[in-house]
Amino acid sequence: MSSHTDNTPESDSESINFFDPAAAAHPQPVFERLRKQCPVGNAVPGGAVCISRYDDVLFALRHPEIFSAVMPAGLIGNVRPLIPLHVDPPEQVKYRKFLDPLFSNKNVLKMEKDVREIASNLVSRFADEDGCEFNSAFAIPYPSTVFLRLMGLPEDDLEYFLGLKNAIIRPEADSPQQEVKIRNETGQEIYAYFDKFLDKLEKSPRDDLLSLFITAEVGGERMSREEVLDICYLFLLGGLDTVTSTLGCMVSYLAQHADRRQSLLDDPALLESAIEEMLRWETPVVQVVRTLTQDHTMGGVELKKGDAVTLVLGSANTDDEQFANAQEVNFERTPNKHIAFGGGPHRCLGSHLSRMELRVALEEFHKRVPEYAIKQGETPVYSHAIREVTYLPLQFGEGQK
Amino acid sequence: MSGGGKLKVEHDSNACVGHGRCYVLAPDVFDEDERGHGVVKQASVHAELAKQARLAAENCPEDAITLRSDDDA
Image 1 (tube, helix red, strand yellow):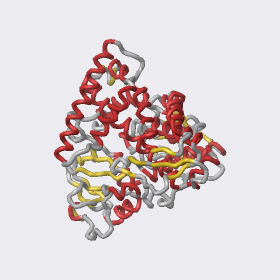
Image 2 (image 1 turned 180 degrees about the vertical axis):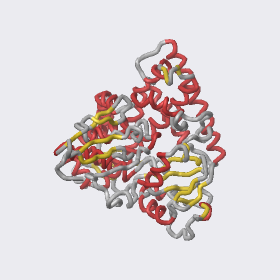
Image 3 (image 1 turned 120 degrees about the vertical axis):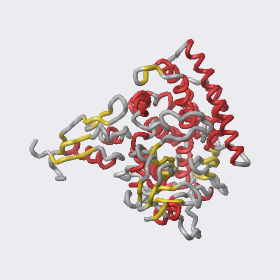
Image 4 (image 1 turned 45 degrees about the horizontal axis):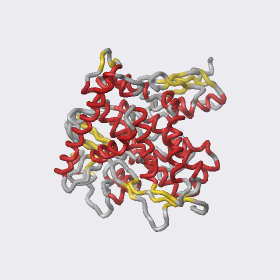
């Protein structure tokens, strides 16, 4: 048995650093090396311990009593834990019992008509052009507009919210110290914005999520203002960023695989399982972080109480031990027990909303723009950690194969 | 698991966290509760519904669904 600190691979001839920007576009081979060379260990010397095999990742997700999701405040500009992400069961359960029904599959499907209209309107703006930069033209405004409408926030504040979200997730800083400073200042701005908005709602509640947050009983009593703010903070980050990234990854994949895109046009019934397969293959939320509540041995490696570990969802989802022909993309794959939305009690609250948004977006986009490819001479640009395709130049039209 | 026989469908609500694969892939066998967690709609299935039940069982990320032979039923 070895300590995890000795478990760094000796040869770095082939990088297993999936934080490397070059790996962000095609991370799957890096994940494969990670699983083979150090399934539980420091992928990068001095970095957090990475857990990369499907079974180990799923075990950790299912056992928050060992692998806790509770995080110290302050890492993403927050002064308190985000609710319900940074709260473990049993405390977490009362929040999920309140929030789950609001984002259940059934309730999400009721929003489909409105969401389709948002998608259709956005596509109309560029469908007759020769092409577009997909991230700014669609992937960013689409889920953000859905989110603002759902929450009951003013759609005129879209750019403002995007600025706040970006400053937390991808701060433009010259140094780690400056990153912390930007995040903390932005965090204060987020709390202040919602606090002021909730004050107004207290006086005149409406038929939206935020009004419900301040009036509903959770675990037998109304939530405190701080609890409501801690949910809002998480929703701002989750609601504005992850669907953008996922949609970008999917459209980029389809732009580069004309035969696959054609199979969706030929057989629209294939779309749902194709989305599942692209979720598996692309896994836009590459990793989540957990902290050990006790000593625990995994894969022959002693993890110590207090250790932070990175669960590499992207690697778990491309593990040959779990998926037949894991390195092949198969739109009809079954079984497909991917964990792109995590697993265990912290399963992504927005997974049903996300699936609906993705399906509607691809349907509406393909309706108007069935043929497209990456613009000649250009290359899509991916960010790491949450794989946003920050630059996705497309050209439209027949012959884009 | 026999090919054509009846199957008994069991769903472990303690393991279920609401991925929702079961009621999407097997809408005649599973339903969703208020929280979007799966619930069994048809506890004993055969033929076409058994196919659906198998699809749900093998696609549940939490392994919350168990199918047993139910030939005595």
